[in-house]
Length: 394
Image: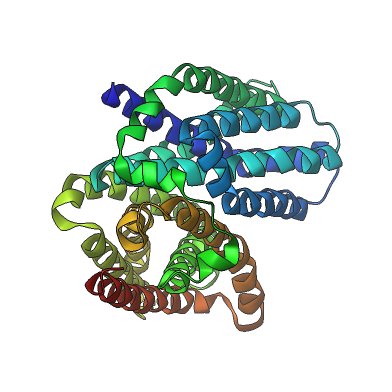
């Protein structure tokens, strides 16, 4: 039965990735039909990100009250409703309206699922589950492409993904009894029996602020690396646009493949070692990009190495949360971590863009270097703090 539940969670992680790349894939057509500037995509994604942060912060209260299974089912249902709203929108303000439930559903399910997996499954499964998120994120552009090339329109792309989310919602509601097997865990019984923490109380947990810096550093690194890779290669290294686009996409493929490979060794190496090895991999990749060589091969393959290095960091930080902060507070902590993740991934790329507009895109590898050094330093300090707390029996 537990294996069946794990299979359902794998499908749920695919569904997490499905909506994430739809806007980017469809926006070149969407903005012309909606008669708005191309830059308005940022307004929609900011609304989604803002609501995702809010629902992540409230995920602890919702999960304690309803359980991880019910929160997941209701969140996917909310996302499905929002996708259908997108599919019938004919005005830009309607997209902004439907972006609200879109973000609220995404944040709650992300935090609930990640905490459930961190509590009940090993590091291998956490890495492979996040690999399946990448599968979902890779599938949706093909769905949108199918809708556009077959003259069905961008609305149909959202409609198709909405149907997939509805099917998953039904599966999740039917599977709710399977989720209740987790209540046999003493750690989770203690967790749900305790009162939900307020944000100031959560932030006072020893080591949490350092953990949030670790998370923000990583998510800023990943977001900047992925969004600005192609522009850097073209403008700063004079790489052909087609070649740059291919290697920019290989960054995300590197993350997906890297998470599969990390899963093979995760239980042997452990979360801490995976975070350090991944960060060192990113550092090696950044050094390859920085090297002032006439040949572009080092910069191109350096980008792929950065993706491979990024792969285990996010899932390993999440999986280590119950060990670092205790199962009784892990849902609250992961909710705040998810919020910090979205803050980093939302605000770091445009801030980098402003700085790059002033200095130039040649600062791209140096920005990556800054964040990977912050990541390594914060992670080292976090491990020291957690070890001290465990030594004191806290």
